[in-house]
Length: 109
Length: 414
Image (cartoon, rainbow over all chains, first blue to last red; front, side, top):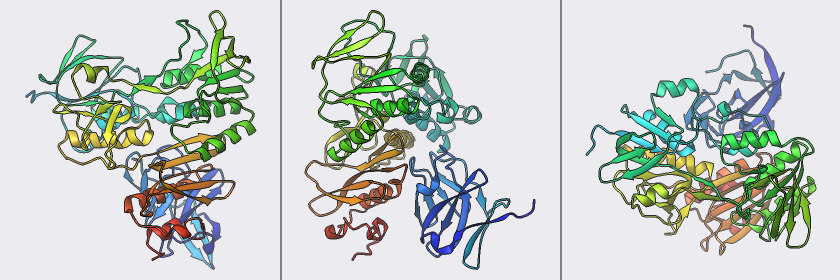
């Protein structure tokens, strides 16, 4: 499938070591900026109970679900502890001209 | 003793289910028997009063297992079965199916049951309780647009059902015997926030309400208060707390307080018998015994008990916490809210707030707050880490929200 790059936001609209919610065509994504200002994206809802991950806490490369403490490595979507046991899908992200772009058709790490 | 026995778990709720799963995930390859009196595989209870009651969830969505993962796990689930007694000396449990089962380790995750309202010995068909999936489904069917719901008990169950029922277009009245809502678990500030919100959403709330009598033949048609007021209803929900299921432990001679007493490894006073979840009474750093009726506790203790059944000897140290959702708002608490603590408030967006509870050395002990949706979650998780860190915090900076809790956690103020 061909790439489908969509603009998420300006690079400064996500704080360092934080996450925002991004909705696009009936889908919700979580877009992350790490402490060293790398950008990543995953599905926006926790695989455990469909809660928006963007309300969760980012520490280093880990996002913690706001309700149930399920943790994921947002670089590769790996579920790190129960109750989360299904990995998150990830998406390629790139920065161009100060904008964060996400490939909705791409497969991440 | 009973070397050929199984890992036996009594109680197939959240804690029991999590324990069974953890045993398998931790590599235990032997026989695991999970015994429960409900017909269903273990499920999480928080959605019962919210998404499930609203008709926006399902048993499958609340379940700890998918059907496939359950089959793959090879765990034996005895549903609709009761344990009659435990023989700790012989390491055996007797089931009402007539079977006697040997165990190498036994976990009591027997949970509790809804405290019953005194109805003067009468049986009414429209009086509901909410603790199980089946009860949630029955209540869901009864709550129709325009139904008059009367809730007895202004605690979390009653108020979450009130919130869901308003969303479904019911008329809702809440009766609370005490002077404020959810007083056992919440600081006054949060009780007030709940009261204001529910009243704004059209719920009629009576505090310090005393029920004098129930009118009606086979259904409660109205409730008479000591104040003289008479409130008509179609559906009555009772949410006045729960009572832990202690009979088995009592009969087996285990140490009992307000729950089944355990040591820091969640082991009861009997060898090879553990307890977890709502029924488990454990000792915290402060030396006090606690029992917790929360999702978080069921999850953490179910998991830890399983690891200790495998002789991992891990001490229970999870910081307690809970959440509750009402309309578009959520409240969350973490740690201990001691009455003698110094309390500092941080104002948040959309009329939200976070109360920080500090000890005499300015270390965080607990936090409780209120906000739109899950907006509080990041701060509460940072508070949990601050509690664990035992960092001494700069009191004068705490009310200032331009100083982030993350910065404080990383010692940026030093």
